[in-house]
Image (cartoon, rainbow, N blue to C red):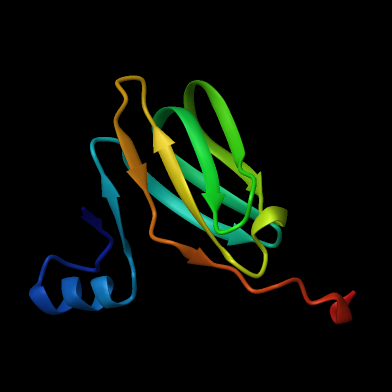
Length: 109
């Protein structure tokens, strides 16, 4: 497990864990995962696959040899949840906790 905390002090680690600022990994690193409008934006160590899957049928996948960033559309997952999984060339994986997404608010359009 990797934790994003201000320091390695117990209180900072506990605060980060309670806020969900951690991910699981068997090797690869997730440097940043952000939701920007209708996209999941991912930065990671070199990967062969970046997968967006979740609580709705369907998935979004970016594949290559040394992917280090990508943006994937969130349309399938509005009103439910999704998760980012990356896989590297050796088969190692890293994955986020579920990311809960609100439904699209059509009244704002």
